[in-house]
Image (cartoon, rainbow, N blue to C red; front, side):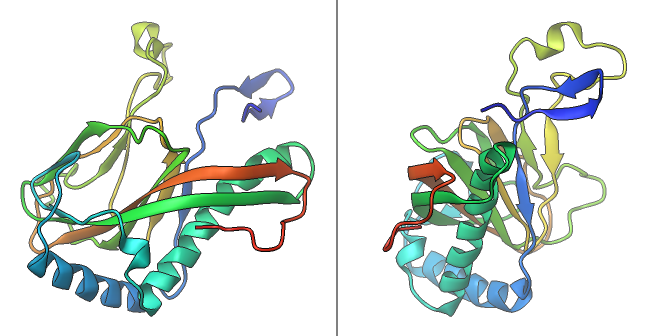
Length: 224
């Protein structure tokens, strides 16, 4: 299935890369509890190092931490995954689909100068970022803490047509309460963060284990 968009009768956009952006209701109260829980863990557990340059990253067991805030996050994560997997069903002209997936999530705490190197999430289908806190960046550093998604077409910048942004990266600002889902194979990074306080986020890997367009869910399907 290709995600393409008809612009008019003579033009369409091919090779679309879906990016889902959600802003759940009631996020402010949930985020306050998540921030307390994450900072408490960061104060007593050593962090792990993966793509992060500086900062603290938890083990990928956040979905097992418990508590109402984590339960709310789990629901938002499922909503984002379903929004992405609904696209092929709608392309086929139906709304029903069967979906099961597994997920792992971890917390990130960044302070001044911390960033994430360019990376992908191999072995997964979707990568998800959720912002718990996002202090206003220094106006002199407009890229501070922004998520960068790289154009996945390697030859795109070789001969970019006038007026088109082929090959250009897309950057998204960190906003508390924003969830961003994109293909796990898409190269991405986080620009160095420069602001007072902590930039707290939750990242997740999602692997689809069962999916069928036009099928009803099976009893007991596991969603996360």
